[in-house]
Image (tube, rainbow, N blue to C red; front, side, top):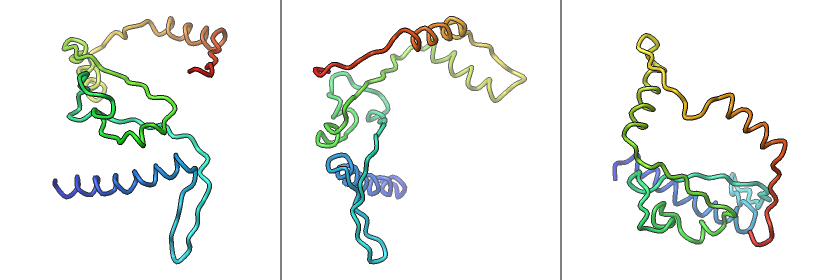
Length: 138
């Protein structure tokens, strides 16, 4: 490993044990300047992870794709996969749009996949009429 990747790896391994404690026991232990304390950790954790090799492999399990131990992964209440299906045309249009944001003289206009007024109306409708409730089974 290059040094910076090794440093990230060491930091990640230390962070992993801290996350275990916070998520399992809802406490965080601190030892600084001769003071040792265990503090309550009442918080929610929202995390994201990229798959190995930057591409999700559908043959592997979620655990194998993101290399988080099952003991840590099992602490999350909800796990969502957001997969990007490769599409050369859409990827090219998105790349051109992003590059165009920084080169105003060569701006390429990309039409959004949905009309913004329709999307705004959809969100307003959902806020007013949709109130999901999770069942005990969920």
